[in-house]
Image (cartoon, helix red, strand yellow):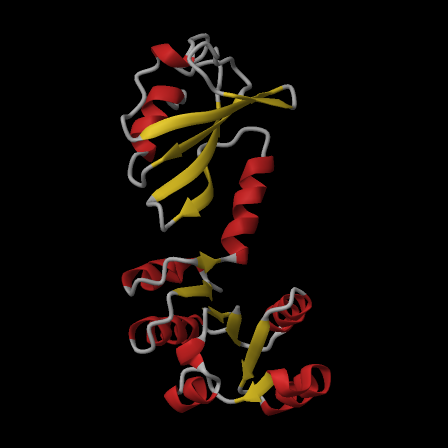
Length: 221
């Protein structure tokens, strides 16, 4: 594959190094002169100097033939622009964008940039996952499929406690995937009985979270 990376910080540089080792053709764009000089010593002809939001810079880097564009600068606005231009003007089929501030996620989705990565959101989800008692935690967004994977705990006051999966009135746009009990996970089937302390993973369409909570989670006092 030919992969064009915008942003030569630690993320971009490490991505470039790994992808090159995997045998892919890579171009790394960086618009900070000092950083570019350091990257040039490391990557030589792979790195190019320029602002990836400028059309002539993208064209000079061969964006028209790119199989994948990855925008990982420290500026969310630049990442949105790079991916939007690559998709809409140059017909790049696949673009991945870094989201530095999770509050900007809706802006990416608004312009059709659905393959995104947010370190902050990922770490927050992991923190919530590790809390002794946590509410519904979103583990993964499957934007292309229009689905998401969530996890939640079954408490003693849950309407689902002590009932098998087949007897639950789950929302039609959701399915239970697995149940983890005492550190061991099993696939959720009709006979699986939910017990207090279980961690349950589900796949569902966005917007079904509240309905799923009503079925499976204890109502706050």
